[in-house]
Length: 528
Image 1: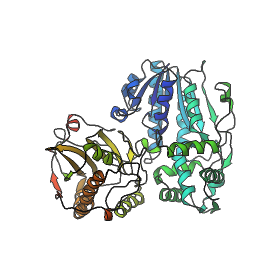
Image 2: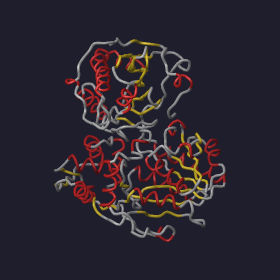
Image 3: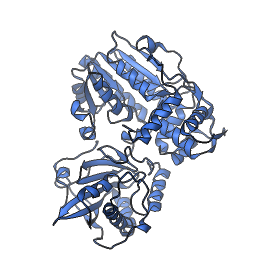
Image 4: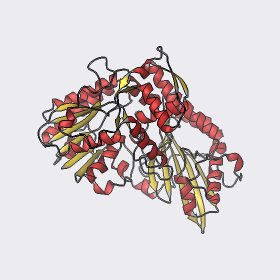
């Protein structure tokens, strides 16, 4: 079959594509920016169509000749109009699928009761109904908590359990749910590319275990080898307060934690298992919670997390690509530029650059970086705890703490775009050069202010640049000279690194960039 996958940059879509390819299907990915898929290991095996689901013309072109379309788009955060935007995008996609003669649409929604739904769960139900009424045979899979390495639900469960041996918890920890392993979700999704007949209905999907969230935390603790957790329910904690609590304790920011928490208010237990009549259970049965947790932890330990919840674009985060000459039309652009000679090979320096962030840290005043991350969380941002998908390798679209990888030129350039809350747009570039036979480390912090607040922000933090970015330059160079790699994930302390005032320059305002990278100057990258 020829399959179209939307949301291929997200957690589920990024795992579904290789599964469909391995099953022998032809795959076309519909994304807003083709550059986000450039570094995926399967990118050369798929077609890529650039389109927004709300754009009827481009979506119709992407669906041309498609047999089965997977709709994996849902707004996890966003403003008050997110539900209307979801409805418009789903209706546009459904109409385009009908016009293109698509044989089947497959949508992954949420497992929920018929009433008392949260806004996000209600939106998922509405999107499913749009497809069921579209005139194109549709299969709506309704899942509760998805357990897999890197999923937002698993990260929330993992960090709450690991960091809080004794916890006072809201009422929703006593609500029953039926979690499902990511492997079973993918098995169901792939199977519907080949099921015969015109099926038009929803199916509840879940694993073999029905238990409360408190039970899930206890199971996680047992599998992870932790002491038994003491859980004390406190009824006055609302979902809103709970989401902020989750945002402070786990890497999942409050904006994404809230819909997850709200979905746990209602019992999410399968009322039927009719899907087995179309997609039979595997010989060994569906994967239980204990095995799903063990599989996820093994993937994390082996650094084989293929996608993470942070793979998808963060709602409300800036997505503009770096403005460069000749594209940059003017205005203020502030640049803090530094360079340093390194007594190491370019390969050693690049290994340090590519492993930056996450557990390794940022080579400069860890307390200051943590404080900036906490401040970002307090104002609703993603904070510093998203970490990395892989401790050694980066690809375009990866999240690195509160940055997003906008460009990677292996061995030469890493450009990160800030996704923290700022009165403007910000980037951090780390580069490797060879000059007169010597290795040189280049570093640029770039800021495009928005309004007076943006200018005031830049000038208020400028006095700290020599302290933060100066130390970062020296410590990255020192790490390369010592031969540090991502195999040693200790966060480096600047106190044990030798200081040297070599090549520390002052920040300079600029209306354009004179030392832009050739690749950045030729085209803009990143999602629109």
